Structures are given as structure tokens and as C-alpha cells.
Image 1 (spheres, helix red, strand yellow):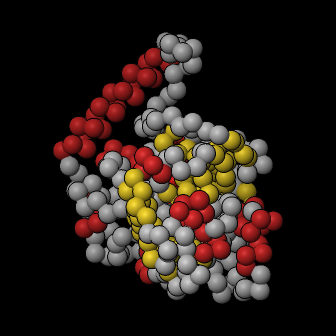
Image 2 (cartoon, protein in one colour):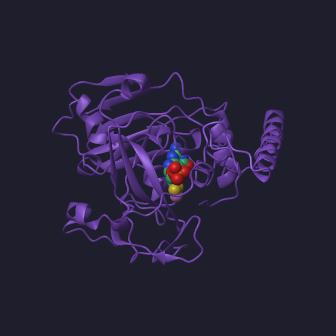
Length: 320
Ligand SMILES: Nc1nc2c(c(=O)[nH]1)N[C@H]1C(S)=C(S)[C@@H](COP(=O)(O)O)O[C@H]1N2
Ligand SMILES: [Mo]
């Protein structure tokens, strides 16, 4: 997704040890499968191509499919292929590091700014705020790949209402975690940290906009933005800020990480739009991870019926 040449990322001795352990575990699992071994629960052992970290099982109150019954992507792919550039500019490296290193306890989320009642919520309380829903959404990165992901969470509006937004609040700014000791790229001065994102208040309050705390029935892996991340299924993936710590209600359109870095490439709105190409990537088609042939990209990622009216009268070529 970048830009200027990234700094080389030092490899720490602990990574080497970790990688060795993983490789041995992988070999062991391959052998087990070869021998037709079956785990105690009667489930065949899955090939451990990478290590999707196992989270805590979440109790889910309802399930809704928003991806036309498409099969969800493999958990392994979702937890090991993606962007988390605080860790690395390379996707697999970033996701591996985030899964192993991101510290997710203790964790608080602060809702502040133009609100009647600023709130600081511990993640444990946040998990109990509302019944957890599973929602299967399409997920489209501006780089041209896509996935289908069963997220677990609740509408972001539930969280925002906790703080009672004032009438003057027009936008929401999301500030994500900075952990200099776990995130090697925070030393890079080529981009400005923290990773920031933002939404217009009506987008943030839209029922499809999710505060996600899990996926595949479990708490989020570090790589996918534990312990709380934003999911806005009609927008490109970069709007989905990972590991959110502060939600700030503001009057003006907030600055966002990618927009600051390369405004001509990454707009504030970032609605999935096959008719408006990114300077480096056509947006007409996409490749579902795990599939070979490309498919057509749908306007608003297939959610036009639910969200197109949010942009009535706007020139979406200009507000890309
Ligand atoms: N904090 C943070 N959030 C982030 C990013 C990031 O680098 N840092 N990358 C974004 C981009 S470009 C994408 S495509 C999605 C990827 O989410 P996933 O790895 O869960 O698929 O996370 C978004 N959120
Ligand atoms: Mo992305």
C-alpha cells in the first residue's frame, strides 16, 4: 500500500525462536494429518499453514448473513493476510507480528469530544454492552483483494450512544493503539502515527457499521485489530481502524492516516466504487482470497440498497 521506501525492520531474537517453534508445530501437524490422525473431539486436525491464534469463544445472540450466502474465507487467510502497518509494510510479516506481540490487556476505549457524557470503558465491560451479533460481511481492500468474514460485534451506534453525542457533533474520529515496544514501524518517520480514521456521524450511526470484537465466533486475533476494531462493509478496508482506543466526536471532517500520507490516492469517503479507479489499482474487479478468477466489484461493495442514500446529491468522483 505504500509509498516511500520502508525502513528495514530489525529481526529480534525472539522472532527467530518463535518462528522455529511454529515451523516445528506445523511439521508435527502435517505428519499427524498424513497419518490420518483425528483430534479428540472427532474433528480432523486442520493443516496449520500459519497460526491463527485461538481466541476466547464468544457467546453470540444472533447471526445474519450479509454476503449472499457466500462461503466465509478461511480463518487462516483472514488472520495472516492483511494490513497492519504499525507492525510491518509487508502483509504476512505484519499479521504474524501483530498476532504474537500486540498487547490487548488491560485495554480501555474512551469516547470523548462533543458528547454530554465522556466515557472510558474497560474492554471487559464493552464486551457486555450489547448482545453480540455475528454478521457475515464482504471485505474489500483498495489493493484489489477481498474476503468474506464472519465478524462478531454490535452496531457502533450502541457505543456512541453511551456518551450521548451533542447536536454539534458531525463526524467521528477513531484513534488506534500505539505500542512502540510491540510495533516496529512506529520508529518510521515516513508516515505520521497513530493510524487515524474517521466517519461522518450518519455513517458511524448506520446500522451496518460495526464495532467488532471478534470473528469466527472468537475474540479478534491481534492481526485483525484486537480487542476492538471498526468494520464498515461498504467502504474500502482502510476505513476499518484496528485496535481502537479513542472515539472522538468532532465538528469537522477529521484527518485520516492514509489521506494525510497520500491524499490523491486515499479519500475520506472510500466508498467501494468500481467506476472510480485508484491511481495505481483499477477498482472494477477484485480477487477473493482463495479464488483464482477475478470477479466484478459491486458498487458500495454490494450494500448500495442500504447505504446509497447517505450520499444522495454528492459527486462520488470528487468525494472518493
Ligand atoms: N490500525 C490499523 N488499522 C488498519 C490498518 C492498519 O495498517 N493499521 N490497515 C487497514 C487496511 S488497509 C485494511 S485492508 C484492513 C485489513 O483488515 P483485516 O486484516 O482484518 O482484513 O485494516 C485496516 N485497518
Ligand atoms: Mo487495505
